[in-house]
Length: 74
Image (cartoon, rainbow, N blue to C red; front, side, top):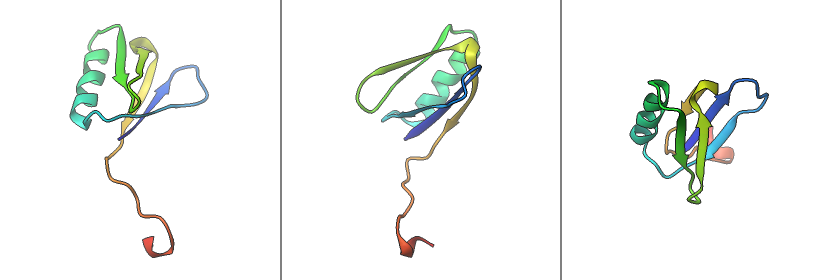
């Protein structure tokens, strides 16, 4: 699943590919926004991503579905 995090004062977004469920990610985001010092996520390679809660602009939680590719996908 792809997670996109907008960080204040950065021109680019952070894009994290994770094996966590959408519910787990949403729970971690809510915890960070409710006063935890940081948002912590594990990416698909097992690395820990830490974003300070005060700098989070937005979080997009993508679906686990992959879009079809090619001429037949229209």
